[in-house]
Image 1: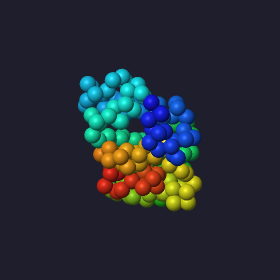
Image 2: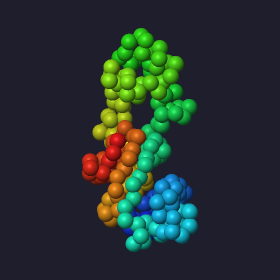
Image 3: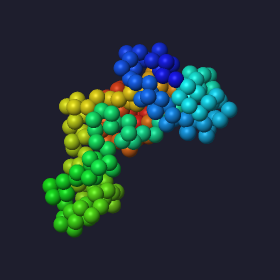
Length: 180
């Protein structure tokens, strides 16, 4: 499965392990198999790669989250060492009531209701991600370059992302293909 990607984009994928590419391709299997079951020869990385390389594949939409950026060294939100577990609630600009809520349930820091009332908690939490990207602390991963590869071959419909690290932009994807 990864030979196809390595052949199309050898400069980017030359250092990527087979397992990394296979995990990414297997992630895509579910969405594509549901929409074009007859076009996928097998529900594994090789089958997905063959489908993407075939004439049957017209567009690919990617749904991404923290998993695509963890390999860049960016912490996810929910793991033991992730953002929620290490949230410095005492240092966030907020009311005491909000602070108590963040300590009880750190996920509230990205809650839309909180944001519309007080944007500071979200913006302060997001700041290290933005600065890290600007300072090139993190580099795009194989998943980000895969999206770029699809774009270059006119196969990328959209990248629907939950990520706030900006790495989709660092590989040169246009704004109209990224849906945050």
